[in-house]
Structures are given as C-alpha cells and as structure tokens.
Image 1: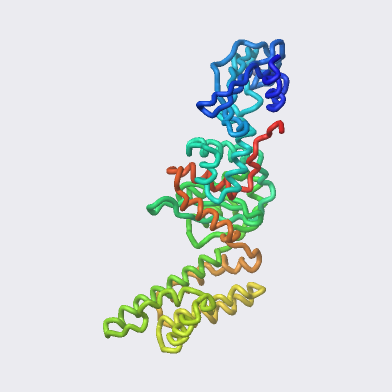
Image 2 (image 1 turned 45 degrees about the horizontal axis):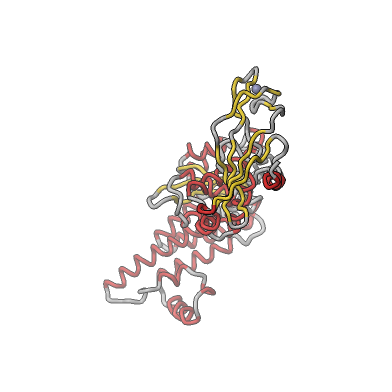
Length: 411
Ligand SMILES: [Zn+2]
C-alpha cells in the first residue's frame, strides 16, 4: 500500500470500511484530493433497517470538502455503496464522514460551526471558511435540524411569546422562548392566532400541561392562543411593553403640545423629544439642566412624563395586593390629568390588570435577557445572505436556541 495513502487513511480515521487509495496534490487549484474506496470483502448494512445486506453496486462519485491540509483546501472523492436489502430494496448507504446530503465532512461542519459562533459576523466567518452563502446556510440548517432532533423540551414552566419585525415592510414573526433557560423554542411567520397556535403545537400535551405562566404583550391573538393551549397557565403581560406604551403616550402629548405652542410662536419644546424619553441619569450634564428647566414650567408634557415615571414604582412592590392599591391611586391621577394619550394607556392597563398583577407571582417578561434581544437584532440587521423567512428562523435558532449543533464526529 502507498505509504502516503496509508498515512492519510490514519489521519482521516474513518474506520475499516473505507480505504484511501490515492492522494493527489493539485497545485494549480491549491487542492489536495483524497480518493477513497470501500474495503473489499466487508459486510454492509441497510441504511434504513440496519440489517446486514449484500453490496449491490456503487453510486456515482461524490465530493466532500474536508478540513484543510496545511494551506491546501482538501476534498474527499468516493462512490458511496448501494446495498441490496431484502426488505427495503436498493439503497445508498451513508458514508461515515458526512450526513446523507451534506457536501462537507462532519469534521468540516463541526469546525465551521465553531468558526461561525466565534466570529462577530457571519460574513467574517464565511470569508474565513471560504464558503458561499448557500453553503453557510446549508451548514447552519443541518446544525439546527440536528439540534432540534435531540432537544429536550420536558421541563418548560415559563414561556414567552413575542413579536419581532422582519424584513423592510411591516412583516412580523412570532418568537416563542423558554423564559427560564433563555432559549428560543421556535419562530413562525406572522403574529396572528394561527401562527401562535403553531408554536404551541411544538410542545406536546404533556409538556404544555407543565407551563405555569406565559409572558406576552397585550396583543389579543397571543392571549387567545395561550388560553386554548395552556389554559392552566397565568398570562403575564410584559412590563417592558407597558412602559413602552407609556413612553409613546408621553411623546404624543409632547407632539400635540409642541404644535399648539408653535402656533403662538413658542419654541419651548423644540428639540426636546429625547429628553422625555431617556432616563434623566443618562443625559449629559448640559441636557439635564435643560430638562430640569422644562420640568419646572407647567407643561402638559412634564405632567405626562411624571405620570409615566411614577408608574415605574408599581413594579417595585413585593406583592400584587399592594401593587394593586398603588395602581388605583396612579390610575385616578392619570385620568384626572385629562391627557388623552395617557388616559388611553391607563385604561388599557386597568382592563388587563389581572394579567399584569400576575407579574408579582411569576416575575417573567418577554425581555428574557438583554443579550438575547440584541442578538436577534444583529441577526436581522446582518441581512446579507438570507432573503427568506426560513433562513432567518435558522439563524435565530442557531444563535439563540441553545441547541447542540455539533455533528458526532469520530474525533
Ligand atoms: Zn433494510
């Protein structure tokens, strides 16, 4: 046997079923090509039922990219075996170094997964690996499929359902998350009740019966779907969405007041938008002084802002009962303010109060963890290489699914 071929055979470590017959260095293509053949006289098994079956013939030659040999891209060339199974018929057997349809060896895919995870952008990983977008997408998809297959969803007690915008228009996707483990369970297109139902069906009946609470915003389809599938669970309307609604109400008041003042040539509120939205402690010293000045003038916007800020205290209570008392006082103040946008949000909170007070029992939100939302945001903004929903879903699950993505390699 050619000592070089033998040496490569040892390096590959693919077992005894296959033998390296030749190793070619193609300098002009910067490539090392390794030719493999089945070792004669070995037994083969059916890829479907596993029964020992005779060799029928060989499928046409196929090519797999492997880990580089020094500075050379390295590929394996072989004709997979076709077996004649008594029960299943003629089938192509899986080669030990790759998944059935993969164009890369398992070891290359494992390496690619490590590189993709380590790089701050997919584009960077793609260039480093010398892959096309199509190949990157393929490797990621296989990794996610593998991970989903062996994922354990048994002990999910806290779930979050949230929407994310997708694409340039007003398209949405709905993301279901295991709130305690901070992992995405799945992503579906759309945000209606039907879409949400699909997510719940990812869990079987047993798993659904263990869910104690579901965090969500006050979007009715999410609530309806949860009531159907996890009727025993508490609904917890998300505190961050509520604060956001209040923020938006303050901004509406500011806009209306600014317009009215400008009619009289009063520029008091000009350029003040950010002041009312940021936490005062996050403003520069100069802007803090400006903000204090505005607060001391009897502005409707300042009142709206104060009402919004007061609502933050609501979340600091230890028990729902005392929080409810606080809410009632706050609500009266909000209504007395006569500021329509604020009144509207206050009423909405009041109508949903029973599913907001559940926060004090479960303390879950759709935020899950800060890093998580920013990760999804960066997946969305790095839109290169994916144009469709499916690739978006794969990327979210790849980075946020906490899946075991690696293939089982012999090394
Ligand atoms: Zn069979």
